[in-house]
Length: 471
Image (cartoon, rainbow, N blue to C red):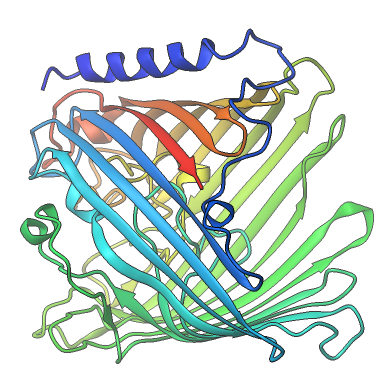
């Protein structure tokens, strides 16, 4: 693949299609209909039945790969289809729900990162929910869910239903979410994570259908409280516990991790400063590898933080400028009996750190990274942002992210480089059809140039163009 040709074509065609819809500053999106088309309405669904879904096609191209041992440029054309159905059991307050996920490979580099984005014909959710009104307090609501489900918790940095990635993290168990009339919310969950199948890359690339496996010997529990505070603030406290053990043919690092944290935030408001502060401490034990011969647990002690402050201007395009800093500890030494590398659990990172999928360069582990981000809304149908992020290692002897690039001596320094990212999104048909184009480039620093197993392919560059239909 010519390294940049497809990327330039994809982005130019996508941007051209978007600009053809309206002139900059136009307040109204061009739509074929004032009312979004919905599958449930087209099927004339009866009362108590809700049917919805989405289909997203995305082409991605990655030049100058950065994963150790990989030298070939990467590309991926995939389609993600999601179908959701809920049926109320009349008069009982019970709801039976399900979600079918079909994320499949269409074309691309079969030896690249595409296989991790594929999950064909998978019931990502299948549950029984009880949702009574006025539970315990007048005006309070409860959502008690039993079965298989996905979930977003708090900031979504540790537990999330991924938005950019093509597959979801599902759990088998029970979850309760209670919300009071004054918006105090309490979430409790106890579940077993679900592992994607088939696990081998060749079968995934062939779009082979196999039901995902419940990790029966792994348990994940969480408790989270979100409380509105004076002056428009929100406070968030949480504790999460992961007890992981090898299960059948699934080898693990036997993680026994407790993560406790807090978040304080003030949402963006025109002509006001906003901020988002989150800190988490992680303790427990973990093994160095997934090998069955590795039976020695390492003491685990790690931290993660996100600091952000921004200002929203009351001006054309509604600009917001934000300063950010992301921090996550890395492992200081392989020779001791400790591990300080922060574990991201089941979180999402695309909204903070850049696209995932076949890119996914920056990870919330072994990271020290300041950034500046500028967001704009050119009109009612579109939004865009550009972000400049300095990426550095927190521990110079640990590997960077999921690249496996490492300098055990620390002589290559900490500087990963400067990541420049941009994205433009536009509703072509209001709430029905949306175009998104984006690009990222890393200007490599000393570590990515000089580490012993660095790919030395030059500055990584990634771009994508996607079209999402919500029905």
